[in-house]
Image (cartoon, rainbow, N blue to C red; front, side):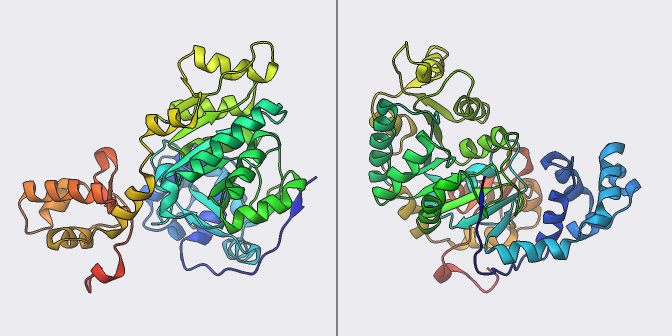
Length: 384
């Protein structure tokens, strides 16, 4: 059983969003194939209206091309947008400026992230707290303690709203006056488990509930393992408090390792089934977490608040503003950027490095640089 939740309508200003929402309804079209369509077609509307041969030309296999062509007549982009707006949630595409920076950096970020509540710049300093649904008294005590002390250090706590350790972590973060993010295996308008309805409402007020599943998607056991990559993707590190060897928390830890995130595990009683997974993680190389300081020091998070305040207060200098005005939220190769500017290459490269430290631009591997966020209003020029 799950609970559907209704909120006031929230209009969208992104003209491409309706087509991203429509593609989400096409079975078999995920992040990799959507990237190919984005690269080939001028706009997402053009992609949605393309022919089956166009899809093949874009790099899709015949089965995927047929899937879009055959399912498209049953999908209405305008209706998808209206469904989103009526739900009161909002949707962020991976090209939008407010898409979470940490999640954007993983290999398979969700093309669309549905959100109730708000994701803020402070949430880039986040740690995931996960564990078994059958938590022991010991596990609950550890989750409460670690969460409270993380929140006291201005760290956002991410988890999955499940029974057990997840719910304890969310509640402890709220009780300590902190921020928390819940990642669902269903639509953000669906609360599961249903007894967490009040907890979910409080999370929306002091954090966010997010999902990559479309509005109205019911909870399904097959949805939960994939959503764990978002829990780890939103976080700098993952703390596994209690978990059996075959559990969602262990899946989250594996995703974290693949994404280059730190994995922490709390040791437990060797005779307790709820500690088998965590003890094995430690044996296989996870960092042992005996106290919150182990996490803060390993992730260098003791000064999280100061880092956020400093980044948000640093203005753009003259060269930085010129470069920023040439960038978009899609990466531009550095050599192409240099050719379009009346500045020496060494000046452009040095300035980009400084702007990255300030948090205004992000480097996308060999793809070049892109905007990471908007400057504060008082530093914008007429071109900004």
